[in-house]
Length: 164
Image 1: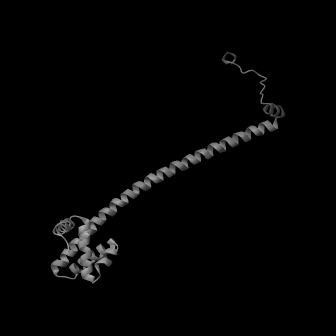
Image 2: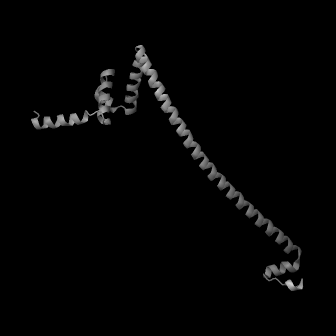
């Protein structure tokens, strides 16, 4: 037998859980509705995904509104308009965010590509300069020998400004 103290404690717990402002209490109420509405044991309903139970509840409400009286259909139309307006605003916000992200990505890719082109151009210029220098060294045996010995002999001194 349950003692009066345990009974009071259970009653306090149940009162706290019945506060529909809290999601767990609201969802338990929804599970009980689903169980009654679809003749499904509550234990099975509690094992179902929350998304499925909540979506079913919304579908049931909207179906009843849309197939009800003229006032209910008007209420349904108001809800549809409100939801579509909210959805439209959210889509617009999402599109703007994606455009900003795309712009940032594009700028980063463009900068990386530009850097790669500059590196390739610098490498190509170095290769071309080396090839020109190699061609000069190979064609002139004196320069080739000096380059191999890493000495450069200057026959003519560089004139200073006074000699010009």
